[in-house]
Amino acid sequence: MKIYKNYDLSKLNTFGVSANAKFFVEIENEVDLKELFDAPEFLNSQKLFLGGGSNVLFTKDFDGIVVLNKLKGIKILKEDSETVTIRSMGGEMWHDLVTFVVGRGLWGIENLSLIPGTVGAAPMQNIGAYGVELKDVLENVEAFDIGTGEKKIFNRKECEFGYRDSVFKGKFKGKYFITAITLILSKIPKPNLSYKILSEFLEKPARNASHSDAGGNKIEIKSSKDISDAISAIRKSKLPDPKKLGNAGSFFKNVFVEPAEFKKLQKLFPEIPYFEEENEKNGSKASVLIKIPAGWLIEQCGWKGKRLGNVGVHEKQALVLVNYGGARGEEVMALANKIIADVKEKFDLELTPEVNLIR
Ligand code: EPU
Image (tube, rainbow, N blue to C red; front, side, top):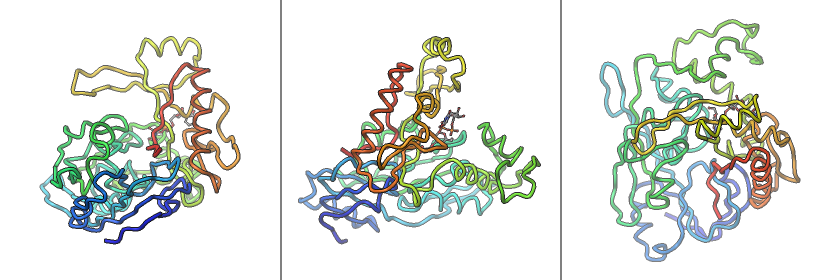
């Protein structure tokens, strides 16, 4: 295990901003992990666990140790007539896991295709897209307690998943290093077409040049791979490829308001898009909240496609901030703060960042 000093992180974050870590280490097995956290020189230093670096923004140099998860391996644990239980190590790329299971005809995470980042980072923010969230299929999370050196297994309930949220991002932030996750997937077809953009795409694969039937023929879903391919095509058409244009996916969270507050907003802005969502946080009785797409709010403030120096708002999805090259984290933050202020002024709503801001 080699510990690097003053390590350049610009290639380890998909925003592509430059920042240095005081110390940097790659973890390839769990023995290294124990050794690292037993080392007295790191006991009191700040720690940051990094996977694909696809959901972080470094706003300055990191004055601590950055630990990159490189734990590899995907294994089928057990199988019955209806389900397959799969364990993946945290350093695998999330989409490689999707490819692995979709290739075996399993259902459950095909809607989460092409999400950048690693498996270990997925539970942190309960990754979600196109009507599916990680929590829908997750059995448990294995994590290393950096305080005690013990291994702990969190069942789904103990992860306290919410919208883009979990205990690993909240009360246990920085306390656990996620080593592996276990998922229960279905052998029985369970297509989730609840997301309108997906069902419309399958009905009419418009703008999809690779389909000769782009005139409006239906794509018949025969396998989870058919959905995975559709999701990949949708994502590619809307979301910038971080290899070509620095970004960290959605920069902000969507906004949730109480139905009464939403009614007032709707009077002022009758065309405001919204989705009703069940709110089951803290195990208490489910209530309905209204989700307002932050992308729409930002677009209404005139920001979509705008550029300020090295940074900008993506032209096809206003929720995504981009680095045109050479941006520092502070520049991205300055743009984000202008957007937050404008949305506050126009709608009296607070946007909160979805990316992990490293300050
Ligand atoms: N919209 C606009 N203008 C825009 C973008 C969106 O008006 O520029 C409105 C439209 O009404 C659209 C609605 O927002 O119908 C929803 O847009 P979209 O389907 O693109 O989804 P989103 O709510 O903006 C969320 C996730 C994405 C995920 C998609 C698809 C968050 C913060 N983001 O975006 O996740 O891929 O749904 O399920 O919840 C990510 O987390 O990095 C990410 C990309």
